[in-house]
Image (cartoon, rainbow, N blue to C red; front, top):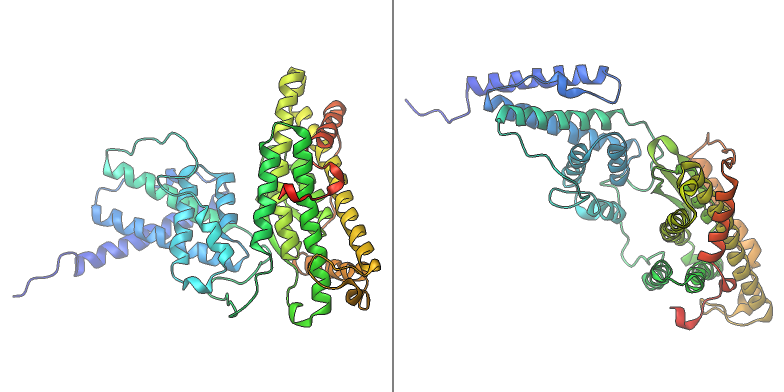
Amino acid sequence: MGHREQGSGPRSGAVAEQARATVEALLGRARRVPAPLPVRALLVREENPALRAAVAGLLEATLTAAVGQAWVRGWQPADLERAARREHGDEVVLAVAEAVRTQLRTYARSTVDPRWWQQVEELPARGRGRPGRRSSPPADPAAAWVSACAVTLEAAVLVERLPVIPVIGPLPGQHRHADGEAAPVDDKLLTRVRRLLAQAEGTPYEAEAETFTAAAQSLMARYRIDRAMLESTDPERAGHHPDAVRLAVDRPYEAPKMQLLHQICLANRCRTVWSQAAGFATVIGFEGDRRAVELLYTSLLVQATTAMRREGESTGQAARSRGFRSSFLLGFATRVGQRLQDASREEESRASVRLEEGSTNGAGIPAAHLARTDALAVVLGRRDQEVTARTRELFPRVQTGRARQVSDYAGFMQGRAAADRADLGAGGRLTGRAS
């Protein structure tokens, strides 16, 4: 008689069937329990190593499949990581991140939007990611199995329960990059903007921070104007349309942070929609404008938080209250938004003067030629209409939120004062030295 391969035959079939029944029962019970989910109580210690391995494998496959379905419902890698972190601890976040990597490995890399791969690179992984004390793994294999299965089960049910949100960009497997397609945003420009904002965050001198951040806003506004006018005169360059990106709006003080993002969007001709329960906002606009919003929001949030903490340390206990800090950030957002919009309007006014005088604009196009086509206000207005249309397409039932009420007037005014000091002086002018 021949030898039967180990792990095959009737016994392995019985184990596989028992594993499927176990996983179906676990999922059935877990899906009926409202979140947050105490799924660990659903698991019973299992001593059979083969059954343990089979159940763990099926649960991991269930989580990976749930991630694949989440793409169709509009979620992206960074969105899933945020959703997991808002509801669970590091272990569930790591499980979701690994499932994201596993699922996306089923596609050819070129068929997935490069922005997705950038998000994947920023996901946490074993051995890196957010610091924190980890508990030692249980010495008992059955106890370790219970712990691992509980994490995977929690992650799978979390992802399955996520609602439908607007799909942004191509789904995995559908991305196509045309040969010779020009990048919609100049990498050299973004490098200059990042450098300016890093200098604004790093300098201890408020006057320098003003110049650096104002220069970044002015540079991006000038790029937007030049790009818009260039596309208005060259049909071959007019293939770009507004789309969207999601940015995290993290706890605490979500409402003032959202107000800051909203003000930055207004200054850069973008729209924004806040999904508060999901912990993110969607920014809609042309890609160069969206990139400006991303960079400015990140930098200004750092500057606002630093100023808030510094004010709290110098003012006393009252300035460290939640009401003061929320009002401080709201005041900062309100004032800095005004200054950003002033800088953008000033750049547009200078561009209009260049057109009227017949000089060459920043894109190298003779302004006399541009003047014979549409005026700057018409071109920018047309782009605004496209952004509005795309916003309505993504969010047909969006509601306009009410303005946030101030709970601490002193904090609000000190936040406005910090915005005056921190960021946007010099009329938004970009000097050669700043780059």
